[in-house]
Figure 1: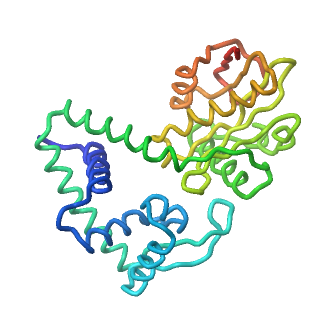
Figure 2: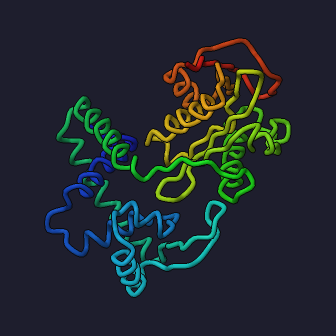
Length: 292
């Protein structure tokens, strides 16, 4: 059976979760080192996030990172990351080569697993893995109010605007789309929430007063690497709670027709199409949800 790259990637996630939960028999120190390299990844990671993903305490994590550094596989430094100062770990050229070899082995394992399963079985494995990942990550997700002028907020906004510019057929002008307005997300007019995964910002959303009894959701965004974890739904629910505390009777939002993930999220959450209610030049769909 021919296995597509998407199926191989999905089954690698299944195997990674298996190794995380029960370990790889006989792997020993080599397996632990490869798990560290995979968690750091090609783009690197903050030390805080790495420790949370690997479920390691600061002392044990420090020992492991110093060992990787002595072996010439990783380096530690302070840098700006997602608008904040953080201890950051990246792979050296030798570490990246070691990671590539590990990835080849994992791809081979995934193809063998695919060959032993039916298409229905593969789908069940992948869906079960997504659910377990969400369950394991839930305790690492924190959603809290944030000053729109903070480094994390500015980083989220910049990523959000950049994605819109890429996905909209005619691009996106953040000034025309109200991208420079922030006072509307400060109390008492509104509130901004930032979602953090393992301490790193991965999403945002805001509410602002729109009309008597009505609030509007703006700047809903989740980082692509965090979109399988249910963060969008949790952000939306937290924003609705803010609206209820303001005694709003309804909540509104707009979006673009190309943002299919957002459209599915809003429909699942009970939002219904309404007529245009604003002059946003990039909006193509308008929604409202009554709040009880």
